[in-house]
Image 1 (tube, rainbow, N blue to C red):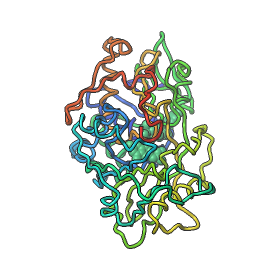
Image 2: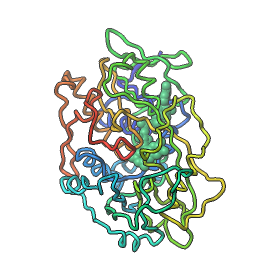
Image 3: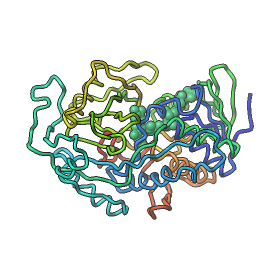
Length: 434
Ligand SMILES: Cc1cc2nc3c(=O)[nH]c(=O)nc-3n(C[C@H](O)[C@H](O)[C@H](O)COP(=O)(O)OP(=O)(O)OC[C@H]3O[C@@H](n4cnc5c(N)ncnc54)[C@H](O)[C@@H]3O)c2cc1C
């Protein structure tokens, strides 16, 4: 039996590691336990690590805008005692396409005006000017490759888009997690790898520790579920699986990696794009490559899976995403075999995260990150620390959830937005866009 920790964090992805860092700064003795051999080897390692500011609500956009400040000034966040190379944040800007289906992004300008985040309306001609590889025909609604009319324009010209000068991507999400791990360890945090949590112990009505697959026990009065796509399985271990209004479940995703169209310096000139007109998101990657994911258009069914049993090889889906993208970039060379990754999102009912306590005293959750919370990880660490401190000091977080101040942009978030028992956010895109 091992004792001596104030908090056990189940999971050492980017979110679990940032929670360790923030709790350690407050003097908590933390232990992250992960069944993988190193930090950031779960869904974090597959993340496209896009840092963007547009979400479906003001508060979610404000959180992301605040989060951007941490990536652009990473050394300031992790400190100077880091031995690993620091990650690089590349500010490419972000472009989202206006479509009939997204109501030509009418909701975006009021949100960005409210939070003070700059944006520009771009016409189809302006998009073409910045990105000469773009075919400005309209293709919506998104179709399957085998559907009649696939790749045949449905309109002479797209409606244009909104461009955000603030936004880009982090070059290596696993390395970002390693950076934070070292920062946390410099504050006393501990990490244990190749160790799977198989039981959550309770004592006198509160969480008291975990049992690992080798039969050993680790005790602590605070347990935090940050298990990514395994979040619902960990909640079941804690006996609270059915006791949250908002549930989480894993969804399988594929992301393609291929060469950008010849003759254009996409690596240095291409913005991150979210294109509802063809149903993809994309960003530059080193070597003049591009990554292509899906924005889960209405014609595609979400691939709900078991986090321990799912198809780990790429399927026809990856070719579908590339073919859809090729409508926009007609010079895209499509190889017969496409490289890419398969990974899982931990999706909540409204594609917004749960950062909350639970019905089991001492047991907390930072889950349901729904493919869109890498960018917020440093703030999630602070938010979870604030929630844990409030609850452990006796505050009834369910009835008085309090607020969290975003100091860089001067915005205050209601913590109720992350509640496990909130009403479903009807403004959500119900997709990875949040
Ligand atoms: C393909 C893809 C693309 C994405 N793109 C973006 C993006 O562009 N921008 C963005 O902001 N977000 C993006 N995301 C989302 C973002 O990457 C995730 O929200 C974030 O990485 C989740 O981090 P985490 O620490 O919660 O989970 P994870 O990184 O999944 O970590 C959870 C850890 O828990 C461990 N674990 C699970 N069960 C147990 C157990 N029983 N015992 C011990 N350990 C256990 C796992 O081994 C794992 O390491 C993307 C996600 C995916 C999958």
